[in-house]
Image 1 (spheres, rainbow, N blue to C red):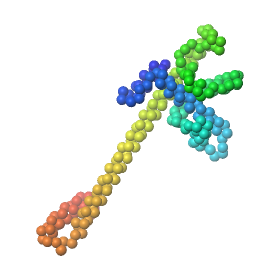
Image 2 (cartoon, one colour):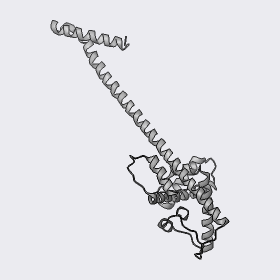
Image 3 (spheres, rainbow, N blue to C red):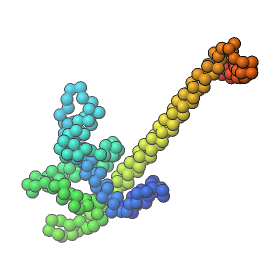
Image 4 (cartoon, rainbow, N blue to C red):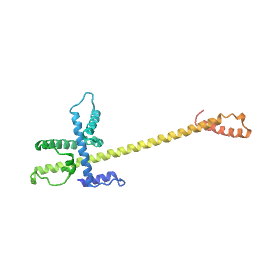
Length: 240
């Protein structure tokens, strides 16, 4: 699966992309995204279950961001990923299934996994290995094995779809940033052009307002030529 993900990532990023990744780094990055997004979803749903009068979705997001940062002492950096993943039914289904299973296991054992424990190993559904029961016995081939294969296949497709959507969002953001930069450059060039034109008009006004009676005939002749050129320029610009 992760070989396919790596191929899609390289294809989307292009040969000029500076960051180099392999299967392991992609798995670790996806695990980090999924872990942080799952924690944010828990905070968001916690607020969603206790709605306040007059609050909308945007208000819930802002409050969830604050709650996340207060609880984990770090800001939530994957809001764009959350906006993509919540629209993916497969991811939502997997999240609620795993959240329920984790809560049940924590209740049965009387303990809950810590962040360090989760970070020290890759998630089981991302490592292609044989599944064993708590006693270390490999379960027999059969309906459960078929269901597990189907589940893993759906999870793989969900990961690939999520990465594709994330890449598409990043590409759109790059295009928007490029368009904004081009627009700012055009505005700056226009401002420079208007400033230069204003300075030129100020210089021309001084020439046009010059009292020629006090000048010598030769200097007056030069001013006559300059004033004639200025009048032609103003006429072509539609000033009169």
